[in-house]
Image (tube, rainbow, N blue to C red):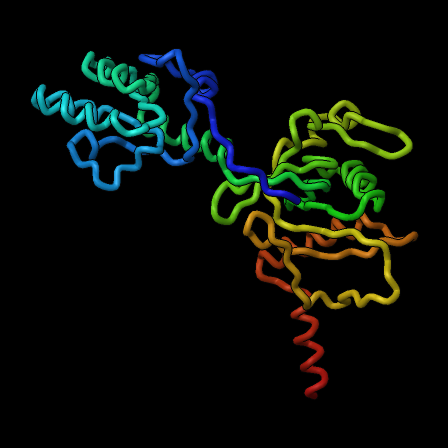
Length: 310
């Protein structure tokens, strides 16, 4: 498992994906966004540049626009000169407001990008933030299978040929949904959530040894797949080892760290005669039950202690 370097988003890609209009964009270089945060330009347009987060996308809405239009012309030019002297990746003006000539002139002088959107400012910022979170969130690609079992995102790991894909196929036949097979792209979308999905080229496909590549969507319908899913539980499949102790009560808690986030982990030994897919179903249901405040292992231990005390 290897964490990738942080991505950046091309301004050209941003324009296409969010349907933005180009007000001014120099043609002699490429521009990129590397920060997932955005900044409304109220304070800079008022002349306050201390702690100015210039590396973010800068947004002008109706409030900032109306205030700035009423500033003295000479003061406007001074503020714009200082504003565009910073390496701002792009300035976006919302609500399809007319862009004044002095803004375009200073953008041209410092070779900065100016775009516009016809969207409401608040809605546009929400849309832009979600877009940047998805594109720029820390991410990693790991070997495994991700399935949605009773609403729980279960990441199945294990050594090659242990039976991950075959187990996932059994789960699909029981009505559960495939998210990714073989390679799982995981993004940390906020401080506590890990979102998993398949690489686009592998989406909906599975590799079953002896058969080859199958298209799950074609065979089982759209209800058998899901584009992405939060990762709630990691299950590690391993060959049964007679010398190893396996937790029989469920009191021991084990976790796997992915992108700095701890995810509950279960190790399930595999051997002929064990129905692995059924065990994973039970593990998912038990996880849900614990999330609702009931832990069967703790309840059993509590009752056992009461019997011993008597």
